[in-house]
Image (cartoon, rainbow, N blue to C red):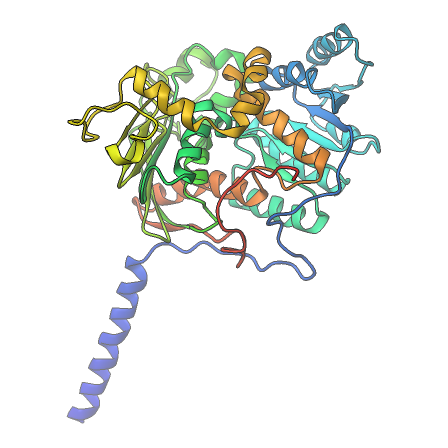
Length: 463
């Protein structure tokens, strides 16, 4: 009897140990099985398209700017324009015609009218700049009707949308790219080039952020949809601007993998005050989900860390906090761009004094020497034209130029559907972490076993 009780007691301890281990581990997020017959989109290249015929859905701030840029891309044609508001379509149409281009087909009137655009047989790419909640529905419908899609950030706001975009892209064999313009910022591209040349040594940490006081801008979002999204969603709802460029430096799903994240947030203090001021008709303004500030820490399979921050409510200077930290060097863009390296990494291109040991920023003159030596090939190729065309200093035009270039030449795009998934998942997974008491959450392998198929991030070019 005593032996039996001892065995029962020992078995109970084992069960308890297993429960504790499960409870202390990260929250697991389901990875749906890849549907039968589908394969991944890693390094996917569609047949080349000589002139890319583009339909634009959403012609507010971002969409109208895209129209202006696409008028400078000779191998793209603006074929169709769509917005709920007729006046937005009319303004875009006027700019197309003023540039001497043929009038585009026009669609407006309701939130379902985009379907008519997607059903046309003379469109290759649907360029989506709607409010966030319509990003994924429009993209899914477009891919189902044989179109490549380019989606403004964030391309997806839930795990369900993320997996729907992945599965639909894989099944239809259509590109599904998120329009993360900050990956084309001149500083970020030059830093990426430095990293690919080994200047930072072993990179072990990166930071990114979206800190932008939106108080002067809430009214510019039609029907105040962005404030409403923040009112109803917790977590880092806009993570990709700072996160995407860091992930490219880290070769995420091209040599490293996101594994676990943990998020914390402050109280929602300013949000309820903003609702009271702008929308007094809302009955319970205190029921505001998004915090004044959200922080997320992410660990990769190689043991590297990434910190992401989000804050749009309070008066703080704009800051994307792009930062790369390695054993031999350091890059930091805000509040001013700067670099610091151990002398032996840069002495062949930068005049550094013998006493310099990397513990301070390079001088403005040294900074310019270094940037001249490591300017990214894309900036050399199109940078001056991009500055002239514009769009956040030119990075928006470089983003559009590269998208059309890759489609013209049948090349893999700079950002694939798995980049979209990894960068967007911070939104719903940070909310899950916060809601579970700041618990760690597993980041799924969105490639479903494709990790390592590509080694190293790079931009594709015609050989």
